[in-house]
Image 1 (cartoon, rainbow over the protein chains, first blue to last red):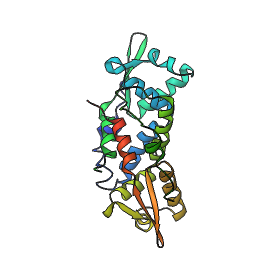
Image 2 (cartoon, each protein chain N blue to C red):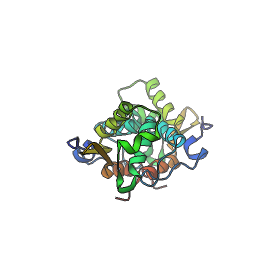
Image 3 (cartoon, chains in turn green, brown):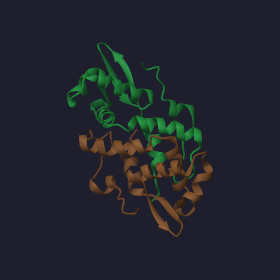
Image 4 (tube, rainbow over the protein chains, first blue to last red):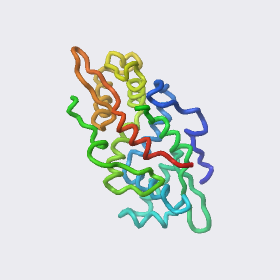
Length: 116
Length: 116
């Protein structure tokens, strides 16, 4: 599972702030993939629960109580976040522990930064 | 057209950085709506063209040449960005001039900011 690499952060020098220069087609395709993964309320809450969890990581056992959703549904959303390079997961014993990939979040944050 | 208000920025004090505390259901619904609007390559390129355009605004006449898309398709994408509170548009003479709403971009940027 930890073989899933943060594609956006590692494969390109993506990207300058939007206010500085236009995105190329490739850059916008890369970024759109990550923003699309964030464009869902359940995934955003999952991400915030993981990101703000003590120690910076959370297992599914820490996450399910916050939702009225089945385990497989939560696993699906975690997979989408992982495939977008936003979180990573590592199996330790019974559980997979998830943590955010700060380089991806920081990249998105920089792209959206304005000087205003 | 300029009656479209930036809902996210004006209606709530959304949101602390994801790494600080979990999002509420309402906050994640609000944010997901904006990220979903950004989750499309054409919309991201349009946004970057507007944001980086001289004077901070651009009319459709400045945008269409960059795309192999029809006018109505581009207008549709601009409408999605506008309804998400990411850009605003103002008619002056023949054209509608679009500019980014920096409070929305700044809010998104802050939410994604990490301390790592």
